[in-house]
Image (cartoon, rainbow, N blue to C red; front, side, top):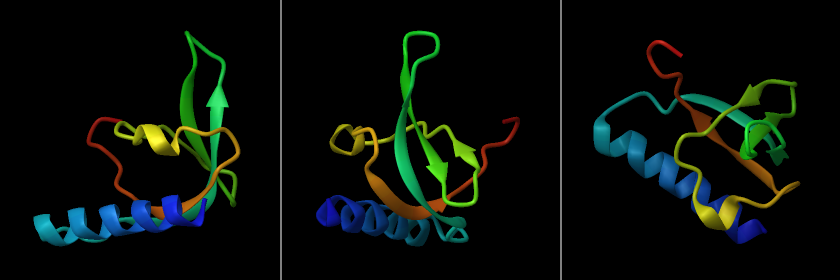
Amino acid sequence: MFRNLLILLLLLTLMACAHGAAPGIPFEGEVVYVVVEGGFYGIRTSDGRRLDPVNLPDDLKQDGLPVAGAYIVREGA
């Protein structure tokens, strides 16, 4: 579980550095499985925000998995 968290943080950091972009909006929370329209994995942050990741790796698709990282809001979202 801790390994998955470190991998997520590393990937997000590398992506931000590679594109010269700001690191995004930091969050802590947990992965949740949402049973709507066939189901999907989202992230519920510790402050109640609900995130819909577009590229969540398969090894992080575990209901209740604690995660932390940073997100970027897509244009038009």
